[in-house]
Image (tube, rainbow, N blue to C red; front, side, top):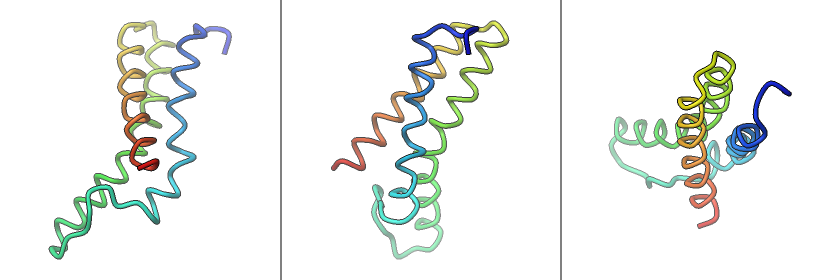
Length: 94
């Protein structure tokens, strides 16, 4: 972990917050509502699951890009993961 800059590690570990919130997204939270249409209901469920899976993927992708030497891309990926993390926290809080 010493090979990564500290601000990047802070950003990366904040992207793991949705892993703690995954229980709400799996069982209780329906941020996009419910639908009578089965296909639309499935797509809403898929979008809900992507809300907590994408920040976790950003954690791994961002650290991997930094390890390979692509620092600017790594910061961009981790920033996108942080934006999704903030959206997740706001959806659970509201």
